[in-house]
Length: 176
Picture 1 (cartoon, rainbow, N blue to C red):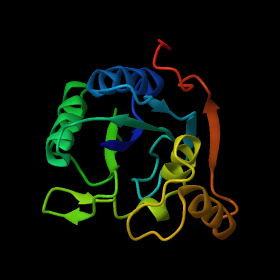
Picture 2: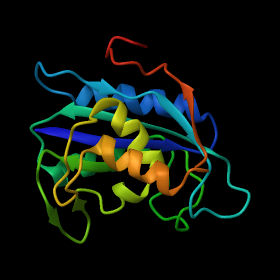
Picture 3: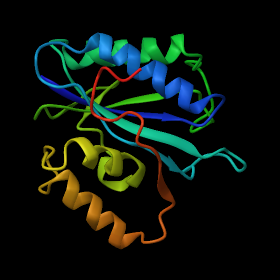
């Protein structure tokens, strides 16, 4: 199964946290299909407390045999290991944020997980990195490709503050 994961950080060594999360996500990758990484983007915080630092954001697509709920548990363990407290104020600054965006064409909702992520189409800081690695992907219920959703959102929010921070993630899993 192919799973899309959004990465974000706006506290501490943001780039360092993204790199470490990427390294740990690579360890979850299985099989011969490529481990895909977007460029790294910087975006103004959305729905965060006043004075919150900007986010670094990226997206990764990996292959896994883990069921979605187990993959979510692994993502939460990585967040915890990297210093994100389980109990925190809503949208508070955080060293790392890992969101499971999709698992193939699976669509479902439980108390702990909704797939695809319910706010993908509203978030330029998620769509832009995702369009780097999966532009043609059509998410369940979306009706349009990720690339088209991204372009539509750019037209609706032309002053969206998202910019390329670094191409360092590249596409190769061999990048340190």
